[in-house]
Amino acid sequence: MEKYNLKVIVTSTRNGRQGIAVANWFAEKVKEHNAFNTEILDLKEIALPMLDEPHHPRLKNYQYEHTKAWSKKIEEADAFVFVIPEYNYGLPPSLVNAIDYLFSEWNYKPAALVSYGGISGGLRSAQMSKLILTTVKVFPLTEAISIPFFAKQINEEGVFIANPLIDKSYNEMMDELIKWTKGLKYMRDNLLK
Ligand SMILES: Cc1cc2nc3c(=O)[nH]c(=O)nc-3n(C[C@H](O)[C@H](O)[C@H](O)COP(=O)(O)O)c2cc1C
Image (cartoon, rainbow, N blue to C red):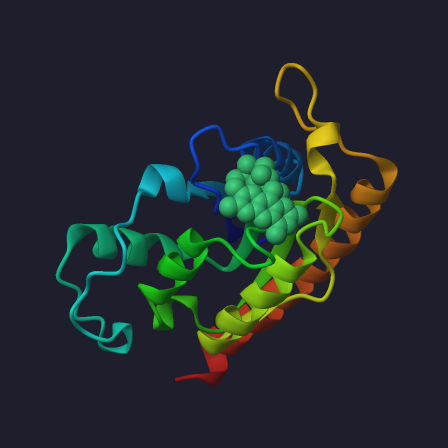
C-alpha cells in the first residue's frame, strides 16, 4: 500500500504553550494510521524569522538557508495537518509567516485543521486560516477537529486526553484526508504537467 507524507505543523510558538499537548496527542494517534508517514514540523523549533526573502516565493529564488530548508520540508508533503490556537479571534502570526515564505510547495495539497481555544474551540482561527491557505492552493477540509476549553482536557502530566466526540471528529477528518490526499496526488502527478 502506498504511503503518503503527512506533515503535522505545530503553529503555537509561545514559551509555555499549551497546544503542544494537543499536537503530541494528534501525532501519537496518527502514527496508527497506516496510509501516512508522519513528521511533526514544529514552528517553534523551525524558528523562521519574519519573512525576509527579497523575491516573491513564486520565483523560488530563495536567498536564505532557513527558506531552503522550509521549502524542502513542504515540498515533500502530500498532506498537512495544522494544529492551531486562536489569538484575538484570529490565526497565529507564526502560521501566516510560515505560509507566506513559499508558494508552489503548498500547491494542490490537502490540509486538515485541528484547532483549540476557549468557547470557540479555535473555529474563528481555523476559518481565517482557510482564507490564506486557499490562496496558496492548499485545500482545507470541511471535516475538522475543534476543541473548546481544551486546557480542561490536559492532565497534570501535560497529556491531552481526548473524548468520544473528538475521536469521532478524528475518524471523519482522517477518512476525508486520505481521499483528498490520493486525489490531489493524482492531480499533481498527472494533470499539471
Ligand atoms: C495573545 C492571545 C490571544 C488569545 N485570544 C484568544 C481568542 O481569541 N480565543 C480563544 O479561544 N482563546 C484565546 N486565547 C487563549 C488561548 O486559547 C490559550 O492561551 C491557549 O493556550 C493558546 O494556545 P497555545 O498555548 O498553544 O499558544 C488567547 C491567548 C493569547 C496568548
